[in-house]
Length: 202
Image 1: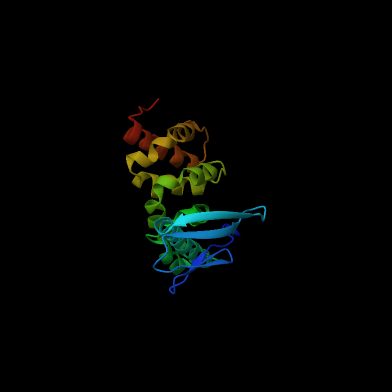
Image 2 (image 1 turned 90 degrees about the horizontal axis):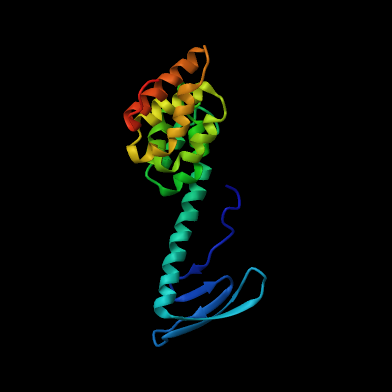
């Protein structure tokens, strides 16, 4: 997550607008604003914006500013140990939580960890964004983690969130092993296939 955003423009309350270091003084009589901005190659480009366009840009930048603020806040509150369960309370109902799904999913590698119980509801809130993180976890061959994902998360998924996992569930169902962990994985995978895909036991 480091250096995800390098900066943003600032709009001040005194109606002076700063675009990457180039200031524009806006008066009530103006209908157009001329700005000179730098592009990525450090060349200067002239822009002419109406005040309506400028306000639209302002709103967009303010949203980006809030997003950056939330990402930095959540990054500072990522658990540093399995005992940091209270830090996860900050991740509830914040859109930017989906930027940290790998880290949040790792919290349920062992359901005896104190952080695990607080991670589950946050992951369920973000279930439609979890595909990439879950597929990577399935490839880890960490059977306890895979079992936890199936049992504590995917059993609670809504149908529209689970349709993309059919191939993975079929693979897990057919995994041949005599280990107790794999037997549990096969059983839950089969249950999920029946529940969401009307799959019959072979």
